[in-house]
Image (cartoon, helix red, strand yellow):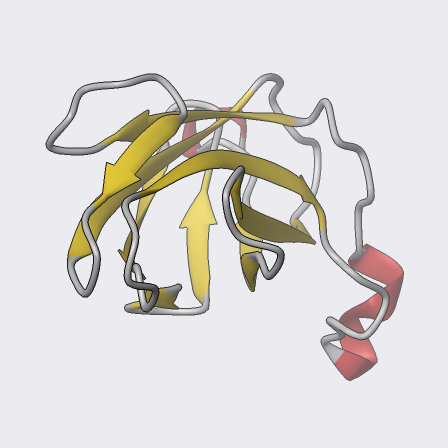
Amino acid sequence: MVKNRHTRTVTSEDPTRFYLQLTNHSDQVQEYLLSVDVGPDSCSLGDLESERRTDPDLFTTTWKTSQNSANRVLVQPGQSESISMLVSLRQTLSRASWQCITVKAQSKQCSSNSHINLRLWMEPDQSDN
């Protein structure tokens, strides 16, 4: 899975979108289940570590593919599927913070799964300042 940027800014009033591309390198059609989880400890911002959040219920995701399925996508052998992932915050934050998320594409037919680590920079809404 390939993304176009690692980090995006999001507020409760202004969701953000990640653009990903999933390629099937096998010789069979693959059905992938897309999911998001809190990212690994290795995803760090050094001096800003104190501002890190690890709450999996802090955000919601909405997937969009050419197949219009909620979180499943079929990819033909040797082909790619463009995926758009909209990330929205469930609550307003009182101060800036960040969170790593891991996007996974798990195939039922293939033993190896694809994942990528992304970073959300979460800002308080401007109207609250």
